[in-house]
Length: 138
Image 1: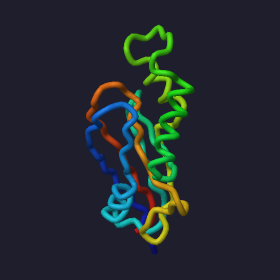
Image 2 (image 1 turned 60 degrees about the vertical axis):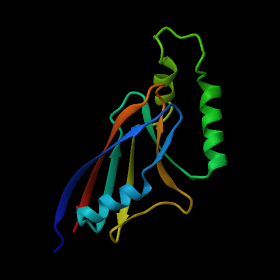
Image 3 (image 1 turned 45 degrees about the vertical axis):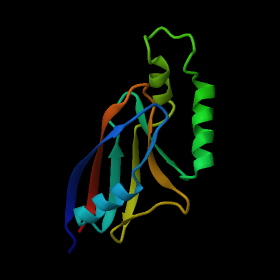
Image 4 (image 1 turned 90 degrees about the vertical axis):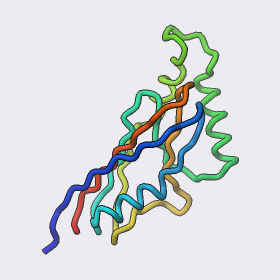
């Protein structure tokens, strides 16, 4: 009879500047492998007010398009009340700070072209953490 297990892991990294994408696809798979969980889910959470998680294709042209889209929706030089980085906070409310993906046969299930990316929305270099929680059967 399979046992249900919960495995937690925190990944820390630094971002050099606004609009930077950090590919977490390999990291999420490493966490699942380390957990020993074969079937279940992995929940990924970015506990930040100015950083978000995106599931999309990691194509350089598409990533430039995403940056342009976000800048068009929430321009850096808009008229805001919050000092210095209001646009960063507004960008972060456009995307969710967490994602849940299925784990099947010890592997994270992604769509054909999907990657898990962290998008830095803040204007300053930041030290970031991502919390992974894998829940399932061993």
